[in-house]
Length: 316
Ligand code: NDP
Image (cartoon, rainbow, N blue to C red; front, side):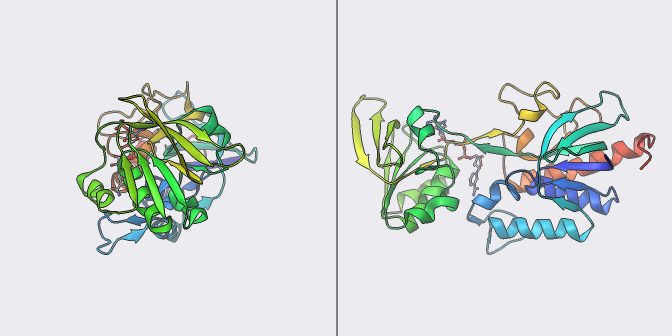
């Protein structure tokens, strides 16, 4: 059993920023990276809107740099995940967690930065062909479809970004948007509209993914007219948003209906003293790298103040 002052769960911009601040405050943070070290930004291409990078930076590089910055101040970065949590309901209590290797950690404070994961449509043919041509990450898997025809579902910024990314690699991208307009920002829509090999189809949904073992095509349905059309494609990309990674906290922390952790007022405090939440796991509104990083900073400051206000019952 290991005793800690601060445990950080998750390694996106929120987790690493919390680590930088916690380490500099001498809280000796340990961070468990989770299943996707670096978080969602490792699956994105160019990050053009993070202040301080006038020429933009690619997501994976940015996350490596954030990790290096956290380690520079002594953060212990561990590749692994937390299996279960047992929060103390007492102010000043010790929170217990079990890691994937079965190790027990007792910690006085916890910062949850587990982020959010890609959503899927949920239709059986899509689920059956996940890994057989259905993907939720164009940047990870687009390369496999070089020179081929693919389709993509979604009308948000992620979908627009991924469609333009795929259009550079693939011969044609059919983009399916279920409404008569896109939710993506005007700038992203402009990019999509100006990419000649993106075939944008509004009011269109997937009726069926075709193929036994690998994707061979899709049957699309116009949700106004009800008419269907089949096209041949080899890859189908789903870009319809995310859900918070809060499974292990269900019933243990206050959450909203969609499973996002509820934080109090302007702070990162949850309903359990000593447990803080930062980044996309508690934010369905802004969901930006910079806002996640901002709340990571807040969580470390909140944890520091909390630890200063309680007796050191952990003996660490
Ligand atoms: P969003 O929630 O913004 O968009 C989801 C899209 O998927 C919407 O068009 C939605 O349609 C559609 N959708 C949802 N469910 C289905 C379904 N079952 N079938 C078909 N379509 C569906 O998610 P994003 O991941 O795009 O973006 C999340 C956040 O991250 C946003 O705030 C975005 O601005 C931000 N972001 C910023 C980037 C940047 O600035 N570089 C890059 C990527 C994301 P509908 O509109 O009908 O609900």
